[in-house]
Length: 197
Image (cartoon, rainbow, N blue to C red; front, side):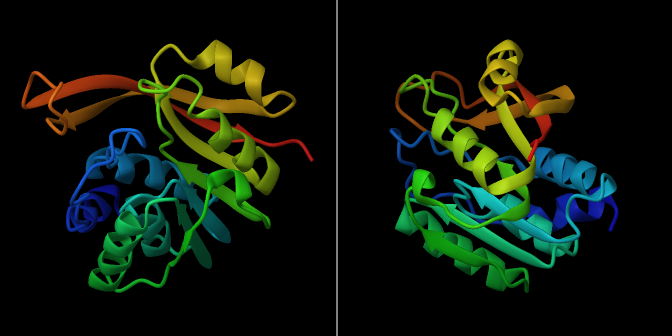
């Protein structure tokens, strides 16, 4: 599937009905989700088992399944987001298992983790449990972080290594009262990490 076709399909994914500020719930925009997923597909990382940590409304998990992942699991602590994710998966005709759990309690093993963890803007270090769970349960990780996180991520994930990183635009819609603009574009860094076993 071409990246543009995937992006068009992912535009059908419904956003959060009620964003939780403390969870830093921002849905990954469909152009960025399609870009990351297509890159992972081209690397051969979506051919087997995939998990989406902090899956929210399911955009990365659903996209992985659309690109042919054998099994896909989506984990989140917010049951309301998971209900929307289930609706989104049905709407797009894919089978994804969504599980309500704390990210630190994720068990098992998959080939690839996809995630857009909290950036830690509200609570510093909020992305660390996501990184720890991904490192413990997968071979390859694709993760979105605030621009300027490279040195921290490299140190935190050792002995795992970043094989690819690039800067991307992440448009944020006005979601919370403290947001001043209707739409703001921030820069994020996308990392592909391989875990040493």
